[in-house]
Picture 1 (cartoon, rainbow, N blue to C red):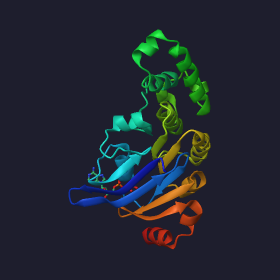
Picture 2 (picture 1 turned 60 degrees about the vertical axis):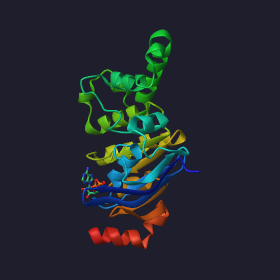
Picture 3 (picture 1 turned 45 degrees about the vertical axis):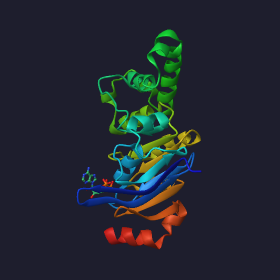
Picture 4 (picture 1 turned 90 degrees about the horizontal axis):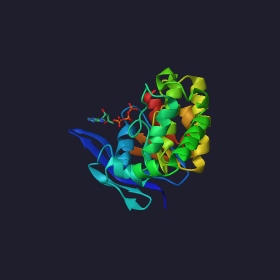
Length: 244
Ligand SMILES: Nc1ncnc2c1ncn2[C@@H]1O[C@H](COP(=O)(O)OP(=O)(O)OP(=O)(O)O)[C@@H](O)[C@H]1O
């Protein structure tokens, strides 16, 4: 059974059909890329999975549970994490405090006050900063980071609740080539702990890190399969050539 199964998602905004019966299936520990031309429905599909939009029809199942009508907070508690939406960097706070806040958000107040949780949180915060190559900047305000480093801090914060599924919408937007390369390296180790759905326009980046791809076109799934399958798909090539 897949960890995430979105079936027949339709999303209509007024007269515009953004999703036209789209499916998305993601296994445990799978990195899954969502690609397609501008306006094909990628962000809308991500939002329907995360609960930021409720689909007009269709179902979303997560860990075997129907969460089609669940709120974003309920989905977060079930183990989904979305960068930008649930966490966000506070620029005036240090990197350490930003990470600590993200970790504390999942810890109840009595546990924080009465237990040794604070020591554990310190160790976890430092480990996450280390993992995202930000430990040397722990005492700096988040506003002092480069654009790429801010994105890495956001990803680290989204991982703080130890989600089963991480959703990233264009995480490398505005990054340099070198920052993109490092982002790929930083994401690889999280495969041991969770699945990933990632929307990206950079096809080289997504091809390098993903196991499987879903290609959207005009709100529907054009093709889905391994990176190799998608690369040799005549239907996909036709759409990308048509738009080029
Ligand atoms: N809240 C909304 N209200 C009205 N129309 C919307 C809304 N959100 C998205 N749309 C429309 O739905 C269609 C799909 O948009 P979406 O952002 O999902 O596409 P996308 O594939 O993520 O595009 P891009 O690659 O440009 O980010 C577009 O025509 C868009 O204008």
